[in-house]
Length: 78
Image (cartoon, rainbow, N blue to C red):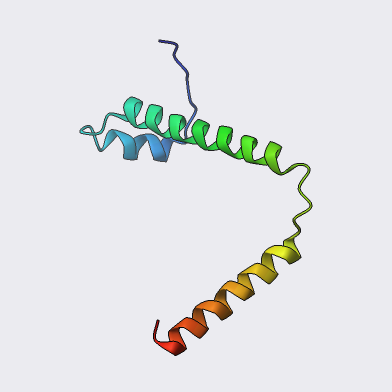
């Protein structure tokens, strides 16, 4: 498995050292994996939305409509 080296502030190193029960290598692997998966998903979504004609105003209008519909249901007791 490849290794990476990180530079961190001395104060952070002291805090990490004060918690020997934590496997920091494993924690960082999990963090990086989640971060990479998120970035891959965001890039995929960006590609899918590249040619979209849906605007921010459209989103706001739909949001307001959804709120109004929910309010109406609450008033009717549904």
